[in-house]
Structures are given as C-alpha cells and as structure tokens.
Length: 399
Image 1 (spheres, helix red, strand yellow):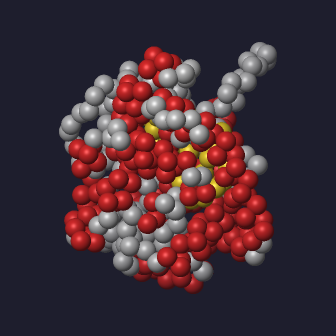
Image 2 (tube, helix red, strand yellow):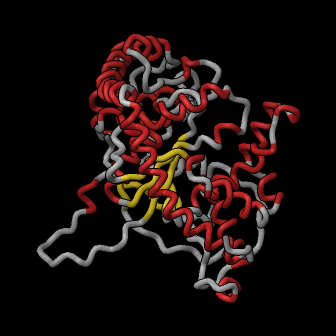
C-alpha cells in the first residue's frame, strides 16, 4: 500500500460569480485549488514534546467507482489503494456509483452482481468499514433528489462543454445516447455536495467535473444561500461547501498495456489492455508477457519517446512501494524479458491476498449486506440534512 497523505492545506479561493466559458481539459484549471498526496505518513506526525493541540474535526473525503466491467489495476492504483490511507486521515465515504453505470447501454441482470462485487473489492483491498462508510449510491435516495434540484440551476451550456460527453456521444451516435450522459455531471456534483465534502480524490484528467461541481455549488449558494435562506427560516450562510481536489501521488495514473498513451480503461475493447484485480496468475503472466514494449536499450522513467516503459516501471514502483531511484538502480540494465518476469511476480504477490480476501467476503453475503446497510445509514444521516436545507432554501413546503 502506498503511503499517501496531504502535505499542506491551501486556503479556499474566493467565490466564483456567474457562469464562465472556455474549454476545460486535463490540465488543472487555474481556479481549482488542489491538494497533493505526499508519500510519507511520517510527515504527519508532530515532532517535539509539546502538548498536543485539541483534535480538530476531520476533513471529509468522498469518492466512488462505477460497477461496470471488472475493477482493474488502474482503478486500484489510481483510487482504491489511496483510499486505504485516506481512511486513517479523514472522515471518508466510499460508495459504488451504480446510478452512473446506466448512462450508457448496460446489461441489467449484471448490475446488482457487479455492484456487490465492487463493494467486496473495496473491502478486500483494505477499506475498513469501521473507519469508512461503504455504501451503494442508489441506496441513498437523496443523491437523485439533490441532482434534480441542482439541475434547475445548472446552465445547459456548462454541460455541453464537458469533454467526456462530447467524446462518448460522438462514438455512440445521437440515437444511442440518453439524456443521462449529458446530465450525469450534475449527479456527480450531487454525490459530492450532498456530504459537504472538503476534498475529492481526482486524477489530473478528471478535474473538469470537479470544477463544474464547484461552479454549481457557488451558483446555488449565491441564488439561495445567505440572507435569502435565512428569510426562509434557515440558518443562513452557504448551503454547500465548495470542495477542493485531492491529487494522488505522481505515477498513479495507470496506462493501457497495449498503448502507453491511453489510460487503462474498463471500456477498452481488448481485455489484454488491462490487468483486472481478479485475474488468475496465468492470465496476469500472459498479459504482461504480451504487453507492448519498445526496442530501446535498458529501462528508464520519463522518456516521452518511451511511454510503455514509463508505465510499466511506474506500475512496478507503486506495487512494490519502492522509490523511483530504487527501481532505476534495480531495473535500468534489465532487458524486457527479465523485467517482465520481475513485474509479473510482483503483481501476483500483491494481488493474491486481495483475491483470497475477496472470495471470503463474497462467500458471506450476510456480512457484505450488513456493511452496505450500515454504510448507507450513516451516509443518509448526513445527506438528509443537506437535502432538507436545500428544499427549505428553495422554498418547498416542508414534508
């Protein structure tokens, strides 16, 4: 498990006013302040013999993974593995975003099975239900209710400029694209704002959605919060916290095994492009043996002409917990055959305990159901407060 943690907290930027144009891509928007995970838990330990300060409220972190396809190495190294450290540092809510899974055509009989499997993988990877709330998105109905309320204040132009919508709709064609593909960023905003989240773990290619969430939060705060909310009988002030981005350690973005310039993805047509967390040993061995490499001598990080080399070395670094310098010393003079054997062994050794624990959890459905029920109950307590405040501020008759 990589040792992840915040190195510092940045002050929140001043509120955004009205809508804004301009494209949004993988680079971090200038208005979106970010926090980067450090690699040393020791840096969080206070030094000296001074009396400890009173404990502050833990900041709240929310994140989730879709139950579509199989959870792969990119999901694990880019998200779930970091969550295990985050649960010790923050108040954490990790959920399975099953409502997002239906924005594109899917197999209905498989949805509930995939949802349970994804929850079991969370736990098998080290998420502790005594520290983090683990639940299914659709089990907390406030997600959908708040989405509808937020939709009334979200300009359609903000959604039309979302890059993922443009890319997916172009591939699928207008007749095969539902409205949900356009509006799901509002549901994502609901997922985050519902819990008054302080921090949201995102990759550097995912910040556009978080920036939209921030814009929606500030727009609704401006339209209905403050004195306007107080006149409606509320406490006044902001209805939503405006969340910050939490960027995982460098190298946590795992690329395809068949194309070092493309992100490892569930939706890629070839299963050869990814290592699934539940792949058996012989499948892992075969995928690494056949993965794309290059003809350059030796191995090295950060050469733009060698994206596959950088990707495979980065995977090895994160899986083993070694520093980049240690990996270079160990591997720089290896040929591809030797390194692939080394990487395969490291992957199998790392994933085997997860696979064993996964099977144990799936064989005890009562335990898994109990974890999800408890998690959804804790989440609903937080969510209902936010939702009721928004209903009140927007003028709805109290239930």
